[in-house]
Image (cartoon, rainbow, N blue to C red; front, side, top):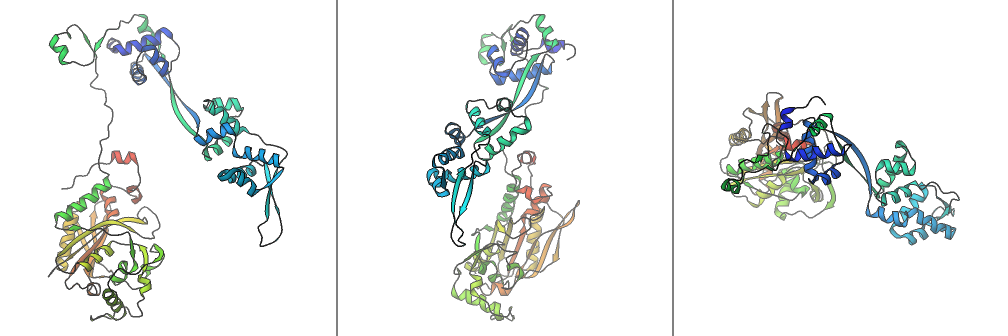
Length: 520
């Protein structure tokens, strides 16, 4: 271990001296618990002291990871009364043979467990009697003459005695490392046995430490903290103070903080509320009427197919007035009272009654607009939506969406662009551009893109002015600015992630290291 560090030795604390003396006087290797009992220092403190002595080269610490096993409550019951298959076999020996139903009646809920393991262990076999094609044959269970090894039963009994250390188990059942796993794994999978591990540490004095002990160590009481009483009485004079190394790194701490993704959601809410918007909420389950039909999405549109939408296989009467439903029907079929051709064909109300997991939160904002047709209306919704997406680094079947509308007299497309530009700049994206886009329920429409130096231009959402085919049936007479923004991709960019799934995984290491973003 090298020569003695004279300075370090002279600065040994009283606790370090007691531990070093115990190691030097008794010799050999010590575990944490007996060393604690010998020195009168609690186990945590004695281990911490040993590490400090090891840093000074005065003791040595060897670590060994050991695997142990313990019984579950069910495992304890089986260790004492026998495994279900063992008791079932004894039952069959008495009866010679029995039907499957006999075993189930005799063993209740554990009857199936007993039968499965009787067959797996080849302790019994099932013979089918009766050849009628449409009748259930009588299942007979018969016991084999020879009984295979019951090592799993031995393991349960050994662990039940408190001898669950892996190496001890291997010795008692006379199995090697690779062999015992074949018995332990089924017991664990059956929920009878639990595996856990712990690190055992052996502490021993080094030659340098022994030399310090041989030169003699005197233990003086140390003052760890200077109190008002010591100062007032002057009793601190001539006393030895415990030495603290202020250069040692402190223990790493992790302060509580809001999840980075939640912080982004809260920031979005704050931006829109500061701009005079109110937040609204709605149900996850929506009718196809509000999710598609009221938005002038044709009933044969590909987005409504099963491969894109989670339908619940249930129908429910449309929650809207008969007049509104009639207006939507007429708008789809021939354009209603507008100078529009609609989509043609027959609009079917039963398709609008189908329930589904909402594919966007526009269903919420439109429903709100239908019940508040008079201006001004400024609302937004941040909530979860669902689509049949193949999971990959940029797509998941459920994600959050930011939806909003502004309805007022004389609002224009320019107002929409200005609103979105303000939002994205407040979110930390100074470079923004708009590209012409197409959506079934807005005209004109745009797609919003932001510029990232390392990635170029990225599309983050769509927006536009609601078509009259959308606003007319619900009784709205003024322009409605609308947008739907994908939050997941924006959050990925803000947090420097490459996989959207990381937003929803509980990776404690990433959460601890993630920097708290400050938005200005």
